[in-house]
Structure formats: structure tokens, C-alpha cells
Amino acid sequence: MSGALLAAVVAGVGGALAGRVADSLALVAPRRAGAGEGTVAVRVDWRARAVGTPWPELAGALCAAAVTLRFGWTAQLPAWLWFVAIGLLLTVVDLREQLLPNRVLLPGLLGGLALLTVAAGATGDWPDLGRAVLAGGAAFAVLLAMALISPSGLGMGDVKLAALLGLYLGWLGWPVVLAGFFLGFLLQAAVGLALLATRRVGRRTGLPFGPALLAGALVVAVLTEDWLLPLA
Image 1: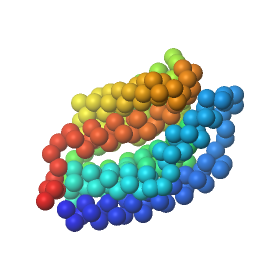
Image 2: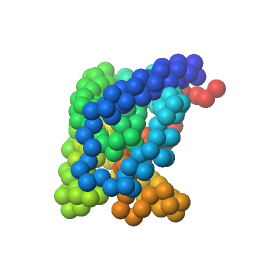
Image 3: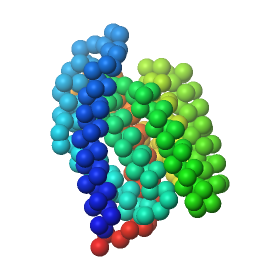
């Protein structure tokens, strides 16, 4: 349990840093042309409250503790802690700016691939790594097709994020890939319906999709098998 607590403390500090980095990214993030009143109202209302202190710190601490309990002190733990850090930063930026920047996505994907490669080398799980790469490519292709069919529903940032999520979920197995993306879409639908019901958004208001996809992937990854570290 001490390991999970240590990871939680580190992630709390990381959450604060992620908030600062997100602030700097937000300052240079290009505004979407033609953004309407609904988008601006959402940014200054529930989005602003969702990413203000202490929520990033708490979320980072809880997520890091969860992956530490789930994967234990194994070779793959650094890769999952990296996923938490990148996911937290992407969530903060997407909630604030409805943007998933390449400067976070691409290092996140390359870093995740490198750390999973190290894990595969340490444990001999090369088939898991191969499946992860295939799943990342498949997820990218599927969401790219969806974005081309319905450009207003998905952005290219969401498509690139799918590659990252497919990589990590594919490491755990094909059923985990399907479950993770299904839960992400389900969470997005639930949040959208709730915001519509409370009249915080309109029917044409654009909502960030990245946080729901990231949350779905992390929940499924953490709950798909027993935790390696005991709670007590």
C-alpha cells in the first residue's frame, strides 16, 4: 500500500504541474473559427470549474494510485504511470480549449511505445507488444473513418488519441480494446445527455471527447483483472 501512496503523492505534484503546462498551452491554443456563444459559455462555466485546483491534483493522485495497485511493481508500471500523466494533461487542455494538441499526443504515443517496448524486453511479452501496435493502428483507422464520415462529431485530435488508447488497451488484449472504447463512447453520451437535461449546453454545442475516451480506457484497464497490490 505504501507504493500506491507514494505514487499518489507524486501524481498530486504532477497534477499541479499538468495544470501549469495546460495553462501555457491554452495561451497559445488557436481558437476555433466560428465558435459560437454556446462554446464560450461552456468554457467559462462547468469546464473552468472542472479543471481548477484541486481537481487535477486529486484526479492524478487517484489514477496513479489505481494503476499502481492494478499493475504492481512490474516492468509495465512506468508505462501506465506515463499514461496517467499524459492523460491528465490532455484532459485538462481538452476541457479548457476543446483541443488535443500534437505537442502532447505525439510525445505521449512515442513515450508509451518506448516504455511498453522496455516492458516487453524485460518480461519477454513481445506478442503483447505486437498486439498493442496493431490495436493502436486499428483504433486510429476506425476513428479516422468515423471522422471522415462525420467531421462534426470527431476531430483529428480524437483520432490521434485513439492510437494512444489502442496501444495501451491492446497491450492487455483485444476484448479490453473493445470494452475501453465502448465505455468511452458511453460516458460521452451520458455526459452529453446530462448537460442537455440541465440546459448547460445546446444541441449544437461542441463537447470535448478526449476526457471520456481517456476515462473509459483507464477504467477498463484498471478493472479488467485483479490488482497485484493488496489494499491492506
